[in-house]
Figure (cartoon, helix red, strand yellow):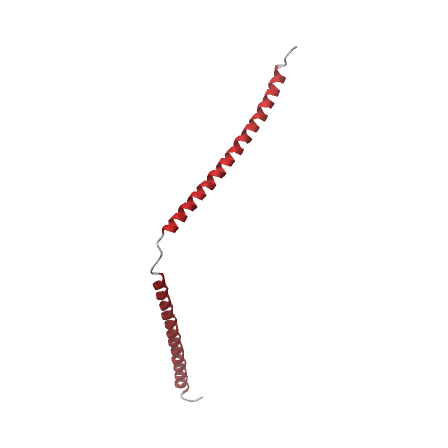
Length: 111
């Protein structure tokens, strides 16, 4: 029986190609599972660390005092806003009076 070397080399190359593809897929599949598990593990670790830090924070005793200060600040701003509106109205009235006086002076009191 005579062995054909080119045919044997061809089929061996085909086998090697298929084996390499299967091996690459197996490695990819295994690494995919490891990477996903690692990512979720890191995320869970970070979250539990943050939960621990938040639980260790002392409660803020000045919270109500700060809210009272904010309330008073907003009342003052509202008051200031009303005063500014009043000033704007007064300036508009003065401007209107000045225009009437100028018109009276320009026309010589004749209308």
